[in-house]
Length: 232
Ligand code: DC
Image (cartoon, rainbow, N blue to C red; front, side):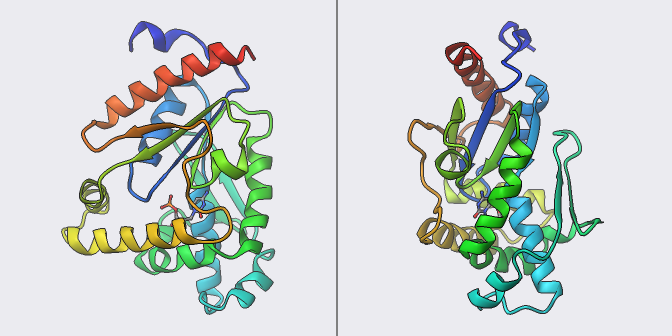
């Protein structure tokens, strides 16, 4: 830990971390929240939980009207401890299930349905509450919490993202992981409602040639700057 780490940040600080699939958002956001004593919210896990529930119910996820009609049904709860985040649907822990290939393939079309986004936006704002949290996703700085004191847009080259994601999943097929990531990026960036964009005022951090620790150091440094400027 360096000296800047020990300076407290404002208790109400909100850090929005957006970026493409596999850019390292989750690990970096959890690391920053842990170092700064903040909570952590993984909004992607919420979209994944909704998708897991729809698949289990046998809903055709390409049928936007069917998805919209059911979006209010599952109860989705997120635990915000950065060292042990949790996600449950109607009380069942689905943290493993939401990382399956079936959910990977279905989550982008589900996330493009406006009724799904409205429902989850409500839960996300509730979870942010009085702040003191690092929130990661695609539209946090642009839609969910545009007033965040610090907004970060994290990116990395597709090949680097695919290598990291494959290693995380203990797989070996980097090429097919890259295809799956690029397909999700295409849908997430092209949708009409809350597409992935770099929010106004966001700081762009390219993690291609950085280690996780270096990304965390950079975000912690930015958080101290934002906290000092906000004066909250
Ligand atoms: O971050 P992730 O890969 O777990 O996100 C899964 C999907 O959820 C992603 O492909 C798009 C969607 N998503 C979204 O649309 N908006 C967010 N704020 C977070 C995720």
